[in-house]
Length: 93
Image (cartoon, rainbow, N blue to C red; front, side, top):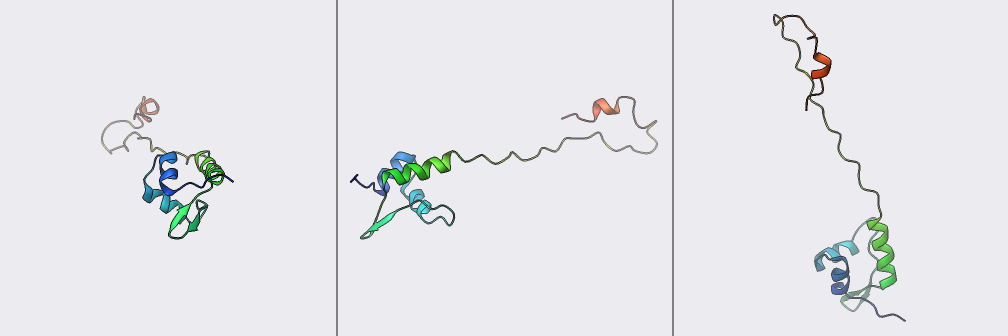
């Protein structure tokens, strides 16, 4: 049987704080598998590695859509609209 890891071992492996590891155990969706031994938490290394792999290989969220600046709306009395170069000016960032 392999030795169980402590909260400190998991925190060191994941490069996070002890508190973060404790929060992972309380997650509603996909909590970090842990066992209580008295008042301490213990983790099976294989279970942690599987959980960690599932979290780190998740697809990143799509970046937010960028709003493109459009050419200003025509103001009455400012000459002919649309301007001859309006299409080339439409996507000025």
